[in-house]
Length: 83
Image 1 (cartoon, rainbow, N blue to C red):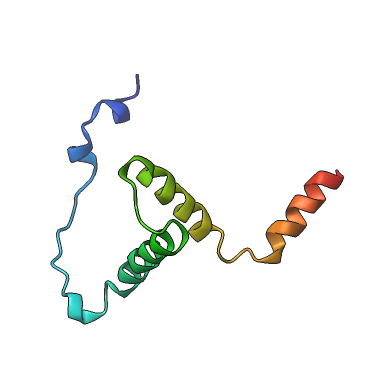
Image 2 (cartoon, rainbow, N blue to C red; image 1 turned 135 degrees about the horizontal axis):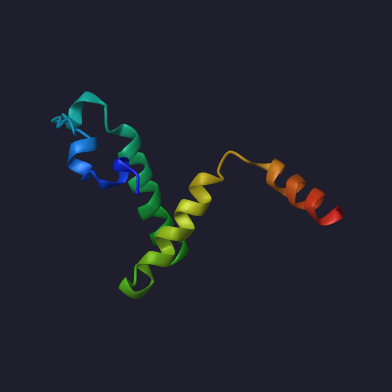
């Protein structure tokens, strides 16, 4: 086995702790993502059931990761079907 895989993660990586100021603007995107997720839950499903929370989060991640594809996703699907 390679020596790289025998080392614990603590020896391979060093984590730098930082204190973030919420008024500095550094966390604006995180706040937008969370508020958009909450708006999707309240708008689409009219509330949150704990049993479906993982599915709601997975759907939001799917939509968030494909938000900039636009019509190209449709064209890629159409091209895949034609081949």
